[in-house]
Length: 639
Image (cartoon, rainbow, N blue to C red; front, side, top):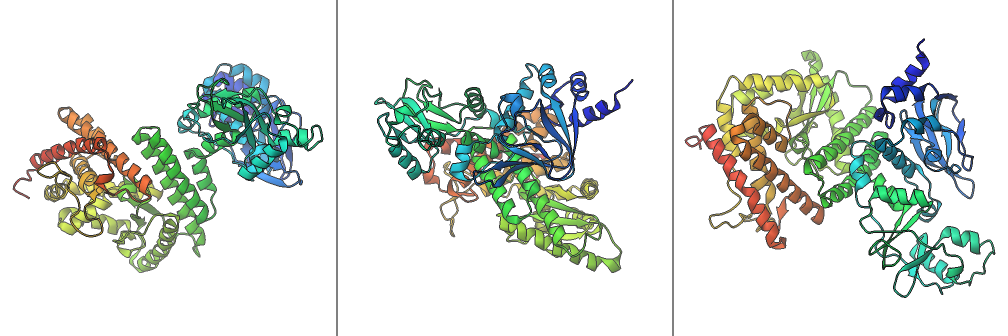
């Protein structure tokens, strides 16, 4: 006879990590023994200092909050666990009493997962273990860092990006505060207070670590009267210390701390206690590394109630971006992650803006990102390019409907501006009536640009044909795409105009192979990497994919990769274009992060000889793909 309850539990668990990493039989074995808990708001699952349970937990419905109780009996919220979130994993990793209190935030259903059975079916499953270690580390409470910083980092929900964070080099304190074994405890405490730190490392005359003193040592051994305040630190320090090398990863740091039940690791020159101290890695550092990742940021965005919170979340992305670039993470992966964050910010802004409107949207609509965001290439803060498409309405309702969406668009673009995305100087935004209209009018607009090409039509189509739906009815996006490709089949003149536009920026190098720089204005003598290097590749890729009727591929590098697949004879050219584009965009992004701007204009004197050489190598595919376009579209006489 089927165990229908266990099967329903199994169906739920399979959708969430780490249970999605188990086979069906193992999962069903766990599901049969799950403890189903029905909680009213305020019900406690476990409290701080409770003896650990034989279960860890996953929220089925509702929400469960985790709290830390301070010394003055105040309850500070650490995190809120929604459906699919696991919590209370401490007894699964390390058998000690709970550090936090778990309380039902609302009427909830929670599954208790039996630890012994779970361990038996997940033995040697590295993926499951890695996930649980990460979840434990992010929800574990470190009293020293929290007391020192008055902040606790909230929950962490791993996804595919977790692999990068988990195995990246941990960020540790490079200049640790030290003292000698003869230093008095009072002197050590004063030093810790002065530098606002939670620990001090005791070193010998060779600067090798011999001990560590934390707030806990001072509290338990000095404040209790066990030792006088002027006792040498040698009497109260923890020794020997646990050490590791400077290239320690986040994962290794977590495992070391859990294995030795410590909150601090001494980083030495060769990773042993017999070499010079060069840094300290704390549990707080680990949480910061885990907190500053796409999954954490996306969850923060999803829960944001204010534009200020969204701005903070988006600004964290720049730190993440710099970290990924420094680690040489593939740009294609970085583009996907940052694009996902940008889109999530836009979606949340739209949701909050709709809530501010006096009434719900009168008809279905779609918000389109155009330009760099539409191509999933927006890594830094740039200006806004967007459009809105709404469902067709009768003529007598059109003005009223458009006015509603114009007002909504103004709220959206205003919030995006506050977050850091500047208003478009050319007003190519949905708050402009020209770019906020019905599906039928958008279809007519696209058709007119294609069938009646001129300089303005080509300029606009080169921007608006790179679009992606961020929010709303996907049907609108599909119908616009269908209109574009159907109309393109009725003309060849449009390709000639688009080809001419793709060739408007010739080689970035002059006759004598010198960089072509701006000749006047504020940017005089600066190299415009966007105009002279990136845009020629972007424009060429757009033209070629349109001519090949390639749908659903907007990113420039991916367009070239698709072209390489379709045209084996030109595979080498298109692959070199893809590589060059990613290298140039990476270079532009690094410049932008370095100078806190868009990275568009580069001062050539600031570049090393090697950097200039790398740029020149990227320019070769530009010449080659432009020559190919001239021949392919017979543009020699059209220019």
